[in-house]
Image (cartoon, one colour):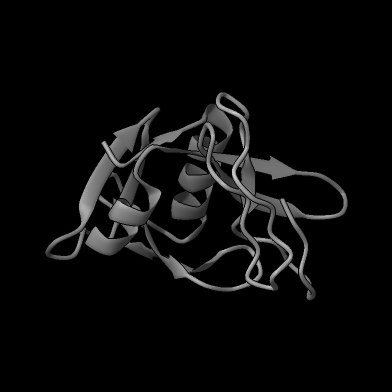
Length: 130
């Protein structure tokens, strides 16, 4: 499996699909590539069905469509969602993964077992770490 969804990420994905008019076969299509302030340039859309070559992740009632390249980049990560009065974001965590920031202020590898969050979706401008 490419990624694991937390319950809050699954709820966010289901909410976006529902608000976009999706049905039971629809899914949240996510495409990521290296770059950007968070370490990933990403796009998401709601699609009626997966595209050829997409990995289909069905967890906690959410349907996530990942492009093949995105699946390879995110393999082993857990996708989470946080929301507060300042921002809302999907974040990626992988035990022992290096913290990344496309602005050049990323840190090196962490000790084994230490989770690292990488900002995926954050409104506003400027480089901020998740």
